Structures are given as C-alpha cells and as structure tokens.
Image (cartoon, rainbow, N blue to C red; front, side, top):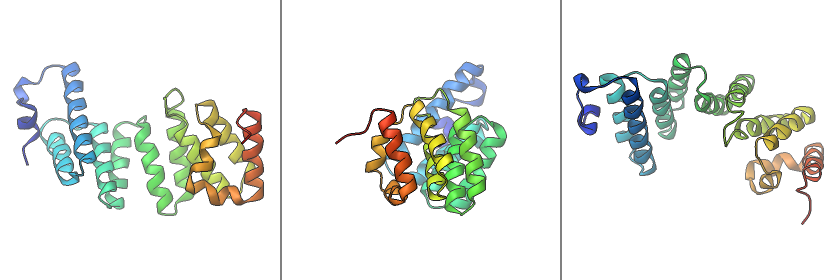
Length: 197
C-alpha cells in the first residue's frame, strides 16, 4: 500500500496551515470514496488508516473507516469506529445515522432511536435531512406507534421527502400493511397533496 503522504505527494514538513489540511482531508475522503465505489475496500481502508496514522486524526476519517468496516461486514469494529468519530466530533450527523443503523441491526432499538434522533437534529438544513426522520418513522411504524409515525413522517416531509416514494420501498410494504400505519400514511398523502392514482 502506498502511504498517504506518497499518494498525495507531500511530507509532514510541507503541510501548510489548517485550510490546506481541510483540503488534504477532503482529498483523502474523495479518494477513499472512489475506492469504495470501485470495490477496493481493503485499499480504501489502508489509505484511511495510513493517513490517520501519518498525518492527522480526524472525525471524518474515523467515520470513513467505520463505513468501510461496515461494508466489509465487520459491524462490531464499524460501531466502535463510529463511536470514536463521534467522540471527536459529536455533531457528525452521518456517524450518528450509521451508528443508528448498526444499533438497529443488533436489536438495540432504544439506542438506535437516540442515534437517529441526534442525526435528525444535526441535519435540519441538509438536502437529505429527511433521511433520519424517515428511519425514525419506520421504527415507529414497526412498533405500531401511530403518533410517532405521523410526527416523524411530517418532519421528513417538511425536509423534502415525497410520501409517495414510500410505496416503492420494500421495507415499508410490511409496515404499511398494518391498517393504522396505512391510515396515517394515506391521510398524510392527502394532506400534502400526494394522494391519487
């Protein structure tokens, strides 16, 4: 594996102030994302770890390591790294979101709700800020809690979700089969002008 410095063509002494550091971090994230998309998970993990060891510990890169480990099927280490990232930056919404998913997969519903709630709080103005409220709505639907379901669906719609999209998502098919959940969904579709053929 080519070290992070060699890959980026810099040495520690050449590192300029913080603005450049941010650019360098963004470049490493971008390269890691490219490797992930290409399916080179081992190389992506090595790149992130090398950079963290040789250059800088950063919450975003710790999260990136968590993401890679999750994609590699190592949920336990992925959860540990997500928690490490949040210890460095408790406002890192994507780490809260992924931690929620990891906890939910492990059956820790209360902790997952807390993590998704933190993600929702941190993404109010984000273009995909509807994602965490939607997960909270799905959890509420599975618990057959119509009040929480409606609350979180309304919040997701306020942030840009189209309710009609739920009809095409397999994870919603079962929960919308439950009459009370379906009634909430249909009422909100009517309220927000999405009802019809």
